[in-house]
Amino acid sequence: MALTNAERCAQWRAKQNPEKLKANQKAANAKYVAKIGIDVIRERSKIASAKWRKKHPKAQKLSDRKQSLRRLYGITIKEYNELCKQQSYRCAICNIHADNLSQNLAVDHCHKTNEIRGILCTNCNTGIGKLGDNVEGLEKALSYLRNNGK
Image (cartoon, rainbow, N blue to C red; front, side, top):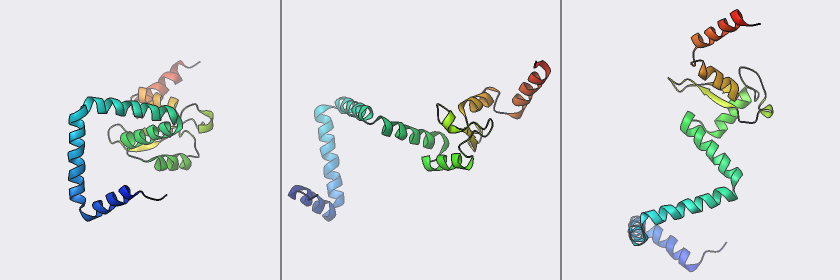
């Protein structure tokens, strides 16, 4: 795709004096914000983002997944997929395959150290969490089932 004359000129100016270009862009941005207001800009941005999300639901879902993996566990989607592959796409506790689940396999991690322990189905991950994320809680539950199981 050929560049317009204005685009070629802008590239040339950026190469000649990038600091001046950055300062000019910053000043123009401040002028624009002062003219229409930051609230209007934020609202326009929200509307544009909502339109994009509606138009690209699969890409948005993947983007959300990538962000949550990075934010919560400090891993990339590639690292998550590698963890799943290492476990043959199965829950480390009940061995159910990811294809038989309605949700993604969950990243199980220690809440004290944030160290990832493995990949679990939602039921197993929630279960150990509700039992206190510790061996004692699981042993108490096991003892209860042994003593009261029928």
